[in-house]
Length: 316
Image (cartoon, rainbow, N blue to C red; front, side, top):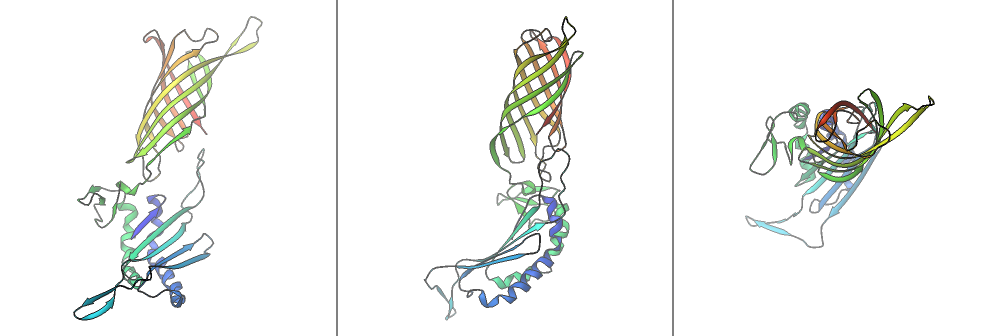
């Protein structure tokens, strides 16, 4: 039996697995005359949407060959491929959109059974309820690597996954990182607009980002006529961040090990010294990682006249 969910928290809905199987078997009883002969490998895909509308697909796999086995002098048909049952459904009412988070919509689950015969499904009834009752809590506990190369749940060794908590988000991609930022520089209020290209990898519950970006800082000062002028100063910034991924939220929430190094490439006004550098150390993530707080240091000429700053970034 293979269980696929968006988040381990969605397992809470599957605590009624016995009821899900009961409804499935009741529907299959009405279709028993449409199910191919047991000698074939049969696949049943059973999908239920949010409106309780059901779609059922039944197919058989096999070729024209007949396979037999003789045991104790008796001849029997031999089935070479297992039957498959796939149940797809929606997890209702467990996901709520939060401030600044783009992610929304329902979560889906997929449960697959691989059986020697479809009739064996009934042995799962009244057995899975106990497992699923504690699984949403046990999955947050300790996992260990077994000799089969899989991670197994300590409280339920029969539950296994390729990685801890079953996280399968192995991916590498390129993303654009636009943001608006506010910070202070000395006694100046310093808003800025940033954009960057991020090379992102998610593997083994570790999130890594390599970013090259450009920041345009807006500085304001009154001229000799008393009018407020705007001065644009630009930095090229290289950044690297790494953090463990929370498999329940899929976010690297909290304190984020991060370092950024920038150099002033366009200077206007007398706000920044020539050859000014900026160094950011660590970030604190809020609102699903869309808001970040980053302590920053400005300096020039090999850490002379260092100026501390606090930078707040809002991604979109």
